[in-house]
Each structure stands twice: as C-alpha cells, then as structure tokens.
Image (cartoon, rainbow, N blue to C red; front, side, top):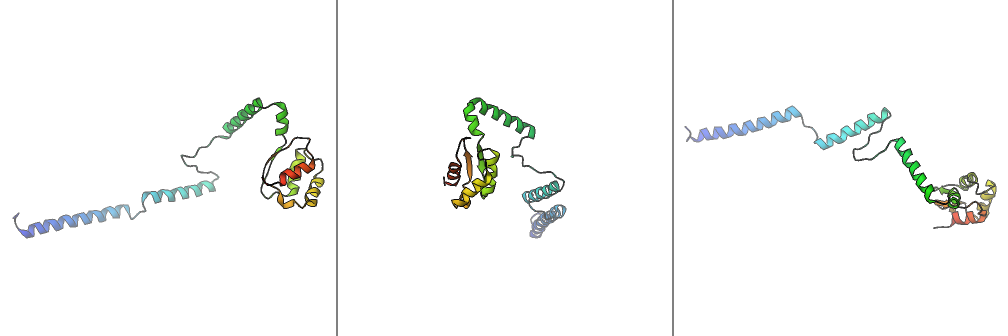
Length: 162
C-alpha cells in the first residue's frame, strides 16, 4: 500500500490542502490588518487628536522635558552664576540689552528703547529714522547699549548690516 502512486499523491495533496486551509483560517482570525508599525502610527495620531481635544499634549519617550518649577530653579541658578562672574559696571550695560525681531517697525523699536531708558523721546527716534530713510533697514539681532549713548549712534548701529 505504501508503494502505490495514488497513495502518495493523495498524501501530498492532503498536506498541501491542509497548509492552505491553515493559512486561510489564520488570515480569517486576524483579518487583513495593516503592518504593526502602520497601526502604531495610526493609534498615535488618533491618541494625539483626542489628547489635544482634552487639553493635553503627547510627548515621545526620547523627548526630554522638565517641569516648570525645575526650569525656574535652573534659570535662577544660571542668573546667580552670571551675576557672580560680572562686575557691577558690566551689569549696567547688560540691562541695556534688547533683541530686535525680524520685521519690527521703527515704532516698536522706539517703544523698546524708551522702556529701557535709552532714549527720552519716542517721536524723535521715529523722525530720525524717517529723515534718514532707514525705516525698512532695521537689522535683526541682539543689541547692548550703555545708558549714555546718543540717538545717532543707536540709529547707526541698528541699521548697519552685520
């Protein structure tokens, strides 16, 4: 019986059909789902949407963050370290520092300079910028001036390309 060709043919077909059936049952049980990485991305996106609706924000595990209290402690420690290494004369000049953002108008810059007491009259600064036709030439950057600087020097420095 083992030597008959029909027996071995039947046995081979039975094994092949059994394997196909097993595959079909496995697919039917799990469904034709997307690969695991795609499912993960979809779930993260949905989770992020739901979290945003509830007022929360998701962070990746490898993303570093610190609490507000810890940030305040670190900033205070950095300020103390800087103040220990700076002389009182240098502190005065640091207090006259400001940052000009891209696209700031002469009026906005004048307001900053006035708040730092680097100029006494906002309109005088704006008129000086208009007289020199320098309204659109204010350069972005950090500037530090001492208290005794003249208006012309301020205009020259903030409109000179670095």
